[in-house]
Image (cartoon, rainbow, N blue to C red; front, side, top):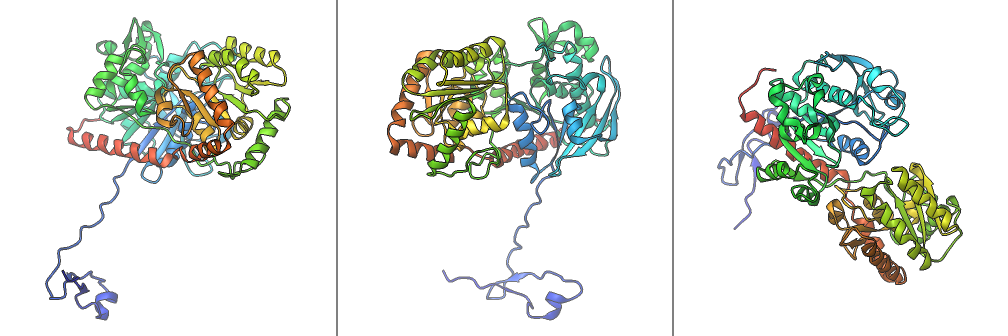
Length: 524
């Protein structure tokens, strides 16, 4: 078929292109027939999102949520007006200074009144700060006191955060900005979906579960102070206690976890933490899905300022320079054997006890182990004792320092990560980007991010014997330079950035907003 020549009617007429009306004239084909008007590009839907979090690595973090809260709202900016709501901890106020007060949330039941400050991070990301010195301006982590015990008023503290999010969604906080939807994270923000529903609101919520094991369980007697309607007690009831996370799951428009495999696993009793039946119903009705976390652009071995030497795929001399530096920082001598790293919270979930059991075999085979982290006192003692037992072969730092952790990823040959369960995991992706091959238990997000024998090693069970077999495979690969090179290169290509995750979240937002638009309007 001959190509159709297109010309614009009177296109050579000055008035057509440059006349005062600048009217766009219709198209005709070569025979003078009018062509259908081309479809216009649909404008991107407007998405105003309030991202509610209890931690953010710009200020402070205790786990992966802090990293996600720093990265995802930024990745969303291309398609959303995403703004963060976070409590006014000392670390937040130190970083932002005295935020400009732009709104206020009234007291509700036993929840106190709070001011809302607004600030912007250097890259322009808007942050709302929930200001109440009595609740949030105290030493310790967001959840525990300096002595390691939970804050006794955590129910009030995080219900206040959730209630504030619901009031902002309802337009009752005086901000002059109202989100179209709430993006809630874990139990500290989950109850916002319930407050919206209990107060007759219609703002949809997406609840992201980063770790189902932490549910926000509190005595049933706290219900009145939290403002839970008597008719809604069943929404939160969990074996005689109140579960903030359960309340969020019941009332959220959609629930997601941070990997597809974990989303499947939590619908089963073994990983459902007592909520498997509820989550299975969510899955059956299309309300549960998994979106894999990404890692941000700072994880680049070619540019990371924390590294002793920069390197790229194939430049293993730069990687070896980082290994020498890590050995010096841990007081270990240079060695020709592989360097294994543990970069983790030192808790039972992470399989730290399994690593302590297998470490003597790593040492006996000519390897070295370096470990960094804090957590359960018993496991901190075990890791420290391992370093004393094998001086020059095992090094341990009980604490956390970001730069040192990054150098460990860059300098190690293998990462030890035999987590008993893992919703997503970020350490394995950080290690891969820095050409350290993860040895993982095949669970949750570790299944989705580590390709066995290609970008790392999977152990089918969370046992010491399975971990030993994984370590033996790693030693064999280490002795085969060609295979080691190929696996390192594949690992460095494996982790995705946040753009892919952001597109999936925006698709969820669009579906939620479309569904909300079809419902009858509800007065705020």
